[in-house]
Image (cartoon, rainbow, N blue to C red):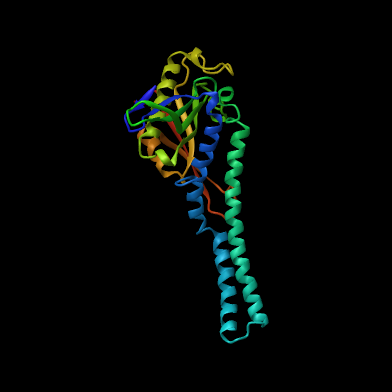
Length: 274
């Protein structure tokens, strides 16, 4: 267990079944709230080709509409066409933003149907960590209430892990820190717990949940992860703890009219990790 002093101390512990609902709510918040990937994507979308089309349609509508209104020709075909184009530009822009939000919610819902549906079943006991802010009364005693401040999992059976022919790779997944608890070292606490656990299991492969006959002998020697340029604070944190970028891949998951998504794949060697 890792703990840091604060008005409300934060501890890192293994996931418990009672955390499920709170974890799901925080997962949505981390992906759609303040400082989230969704917020960064929406900012980037303001310069996307589809947004430029919206601006152009609206501008053309105003070009036709305003002079007609100034010249008291409000019922003219020019004015009607200008109004329609103006509303079309605004409407299309709103639909685009809703489409992006819907895509992010679908991403969250997919997580709830897969690995976050039953965390201990998917990750195995002891391979998913929760950072918990323990609320205290003014006299320092436990108030009985707490909130989840962050989470992270280590997947020994992900696609990236299974593709390693040496059978010695695990994947860091679902890293997130509550917007209410950022700048308190929560991310670092979670990573230290994860690395410490992986190192311990690398010395004894029998400690790893035997969902497959992998990780023979030497156990986990390498931790990989994937993230995007929409999460610069996360990339900086991973690099601080020794992860290095192995490759970058450009994709357009939302279509050609949207900005490209630059995915970064990072790896940490447990032989050199501090």
